[in-house]
Image (cartoon, rainbow, N blue to C red):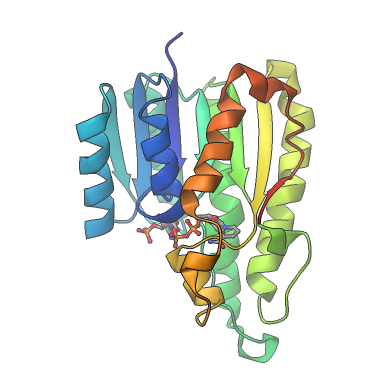
Length: 231
Ligand SMILES: NC(=O)c1ccc[n+]([C@@H]2O[C@H](COP(=O)([O-])OP(=O)(O)OC[C@H]3O[C@@H](n4cnc5c(N)ncnc54)[C@H](OP(=O)(O)O)[C@@H]3O)[C@@H](O)[C@H]2O)c1
C-alpha cells in the first residue's frame, strides 16, 4: 500500500526524529513543515539521502492561519492526499501569569491548537480522510505546571480536541492518536527547564519510536487516548 505523511515541526527534536523514522516505514512521499532555518535544510537533506520517495518541504509560520490553510491545500495536491498527519510543532514561552502578554497566549494557542485544527479541517474539506492522525500534546496538558500557563492550557485543549476527533472521525475509519510525552531532550525542553542535564532524560528518538509503532498493524490495538510516553 502506498502511504504519504505530513509532519509539522520537522526541523528539530521529536519532529526531525519522526521524519527520519518514517524514511524506513514504507512511505511513498513525506511532507515536512517548519520555518526556514539551517536546521530545517539539514533535516530535509538528511531525509533525502536516506529516503527513496519524494520529500517536500513547506516553510511556514504555523502561527499564521492563512499559511496553514495554504500548506493543507498544497500538501493535498503535492502528496496526492495525506494518510498520516503528525501535528508535532509546538511553541512555549514559560512565564508567570503577571508577565503573560495576551498576544503571546494567542500565539501559543495558534501554533499548538489552531494549526492542528486547521490542517485537519482543511484536509477533510478537500475530501481527504486520514488513516492516522497523531497529535503531540504533553504531560503538561494533563497536569498544569506553575509558570507554564499558556503552554499547559494549549496542550490540555489539544488532548480534548483529539478525544472529539477520535469519535467524530471514526466514521471514516480514521484513527486519532494523542501522545503526551514527558520531558524529552530538545530545544523546547531547554526553554522549560534550562538547568536540566539533557543526557539524563528521554531522547526524541524514543518518542518517534512510539509514533512509528502506532502506524504498524499492531497500532490498531493500542489505546491511543492520550498515550503518555515518559521515563
Ligand atoms: N521536549 C519535551 O520535553 C516535550 C514534552 C512534551 C511535549 N512536547 C511537544 O513535542 C513537540 C515537539 O517539540 P520538541 O520538544 O521536539 O521541540 P523542538 O526541538 O524545539 O522542536 C519544535 C518544532 O516545532 C516547530 N515550530 C515551533 N513554532 C513554529 C511555528 N510558529 N511555525 C512552524 N513551526 C514551528 C519548530 O520549527 P522551527 O524550526 O520553525 O522553529 C520545531 O521543528 C511539541 O509540540 C512540544 O510541545 C515536548
